[in-house]
Length: 82
Image (cartoon, rainbow, N blue to C red):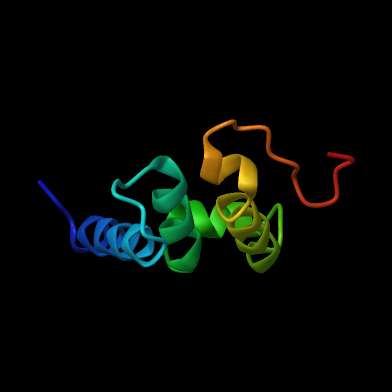
């Protein structure tokens, strides 16, 4: 059984993937959709440990990195020495 929140988050993940011209919905798209839904329990829990805007910015930086785009997965995380 799908809940309304599940359907909403899944639809948001699909739109995120489509907006990035990705032909799939991956965990990264789902995670981004979840943290954007500030009423979702996972987002609320994560917000007690980290700033959600910072998490979103870091995730978007990875999604737009050359390592992510080329599939090498050699991704320099924001703030790391690369």
